[in-house]
Length: 282
Image (cartoon, rainbow, N blue to C red):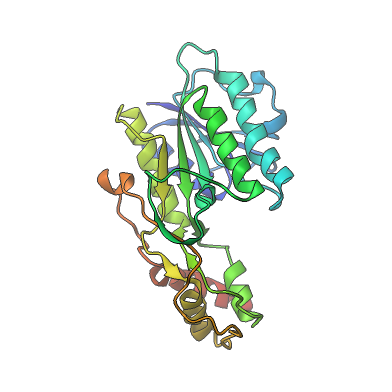
């Protein structure tokens, strides 16, 4: 039985925590507000960025850092990611056996934007201020721990209605681009698999991409959703249906370890979300 700390026990973290508890591990979860945690999880409520060493558990084998910023600004990202990473570094850098750390990052650290194919060998070259904070956080953790940057593409799933609401609003779709997605449930299974790789002392690369392996045109996704929702096609640009911007993602490590996607495309993943969304609007 391993001792696992999930720093950021929200939606994703709670899913990972439940799976690891079911496997028999001892799991401690941290969340900034509220005190409800999955069954079997020892909960700590508080702001990790301000948490003192004595509130964090001793001798953990694995740490997951799974944070959500309060906004899309550089300062919000720094607070959510970099500052919380510094708390973990301060607490665990000098312990006898430092933990394996998995930081849930984003594929936004790849700044490619002209339709390039990107995989786990591609160097990260962020262009936005928020992506630069993510890479800085990755590097600060890697300088101290045996860490893995888990770079997720756009996460969707239960309760995540932003794209549906955008399509239903019938506002202009804007320029077309490549988009890459991953269902929340598939992120959970990926993270659990990575934890088990670490506990079984398998080599894990420093950067792992988590995506559904199906890059697609944003207009294609919106057209399919508009058809399902009965919304109008809101395209005013005449640039054509084949995108010339964005990037196309592939990740091989997880597949090499036997990971299988429950939702291998947006069509598979959005069916359940559409049903949930329709039920809420009745």
